[in-house]
Amino acid sequence: MAGLHREVAGSAAFALLSGLVLWPPGDVYWRRLAALVGDGPTLGVVLLAAVALGVGFASVTAVGVWRFLAGGTVAYVVGMAAVEAVSTPDSPVHLVWYGGILVCLVAGVALRRRAIGVGSKTQSADA
Image (cartoon, rainbow, N blue to C red; front, side, top):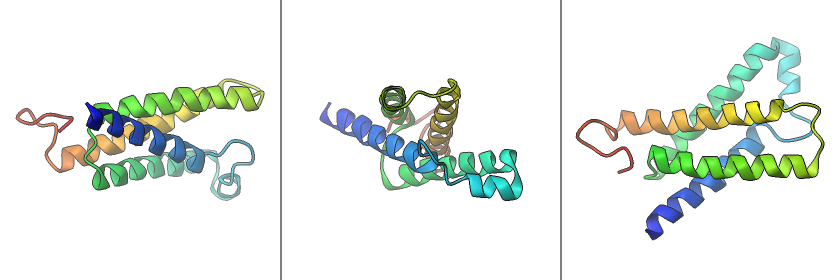
């Protein structure tokens, strides 16, 4: 049981930090890239970076997809509560955007687990 809590807590910390690094509240450094290539490609780069971070995290840990999703969900709730408490967003777009980042992080973990064979019919997805 301690392993479960440790994996979920580690996943939550990683997901929260990843969200802050990928799309920091306030002045987003991706604006410079968007000025050069446009918004669509910039969002694609950020989302691909989130997938890559998920793959990287799963490569150095043994966390399963469901445990990462649980931790990521905790991070999302905490992060969105913090955004609402610290600032007054003009719209709820941050809810969707950070949710998209979380989905890409989870996808990265799932891709890595699948690549190493965890999650097949004969193995547990949270092994």
